[in-house]
Image 1 (cartoon, rainbow, N blue to C red):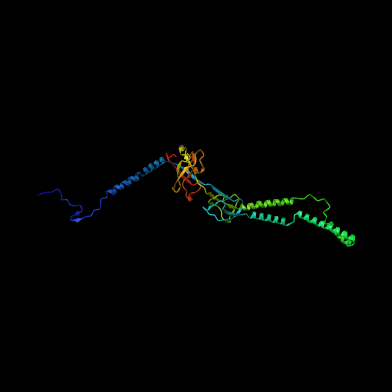
Image 2: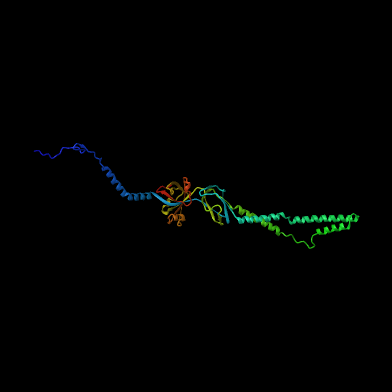
Length: 330
């Protein structure tokens, strides 16, 4: 009897004459899964290495945008009569911003105008004196005529007496006249000057834009009473903005004029920038930079952006980051 220890070779896809379909091998997928797990486990170390490399390659300084902001305040107690401005409205220099009205000021102006009109309607003392002289001259001529007629018998004694009585009535009082009194005249001059001053105050209640720019904030509305000195709105001047940054003192070689830098805005946008003039080392950190967390001594820089800043980000004191490339000295 023959015993065979090796079975005849058959196809693994053939089972007693039946074809069996097998799925393809998955060894490659298992390898990729392991690689992914290793990468995930090593990601904190890779991230730390990337941050260390980035910090070594670049120098970052906190900064903020500087744009002149003008506050428009009420010149006196008044009521907002007309206001048609909204936040971010673009305005030009000299454009009316809002109209105020002061009922008390209006009453004072009306009272003074009435007084001056009444004094203008009444004849001045000089005119009255002139009328008296004319009347007296006429009475003297009349008496002279009647005396001549009476001597000729053409006039009666009664007519002559009446003419003499008129002449006596036109004569000035017997006591010596006092020097002319200028009190009324001086008072009128003072009232006119006071009226002009009140009219100037009234014209000042129409507030106009001192510069061209954009309305940053409106703090009142029509019909609302306001107090003298109260802030009504703020106006951001339309001019090239500047960036103020605080560079660590040991990087002073980057604080020279025309040094190139990159400004990173809060939304992540990057703008090319340039240092305006040599930085100034200071021990007193600007308040805005202290608010950003920089309380160390440093070099204060002023930069200008070489690209246009989007209108929505042209905001005074907006925090930004200023980045210098290590070794990138201009």
